[in-house]
Image (cartoon, rainbow, N blue to C red; front, side, top):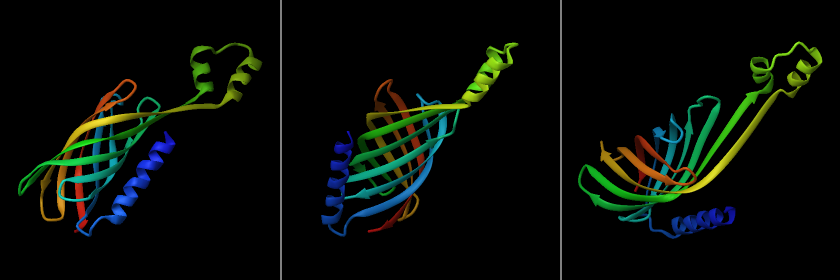
Length: 183
């Protein structure tokens, strides 16, 4: 999978390097929510429009910890312009999403709550275990839409719902503001 991601990144760099100066770069961020994670998050995002129809985006989202779980996601998307008017642009979005989760807990807290004994040596053994953590990552495919609402020539509000096809699949939405850097 790393090899595939490396190839995709290299292809993106080559397209960017050989494209005309007509490209449009934008950066921004906002808030996010995902049903499988059930916690709000914050994201940063960058987009690059190759021409009037095709573009790419990369985004990183950090979800607020909930019940000891810490979630994050990173996505790389291809974007295709479906419709554009003076104030609204609609795009189809497809990409790869890497989702990660970690969980930390203190074994002595679990032991104290459930197994407190009268044997001090046994209690000390559990206290010495300390913190334990585990983590996992999952790679999936995302399919969604992007709607942008122009506030000015360089500022747009946007919303982006998508479904992530991965183990256990989930629905995610991002909403925020993007700042165009130049044309």
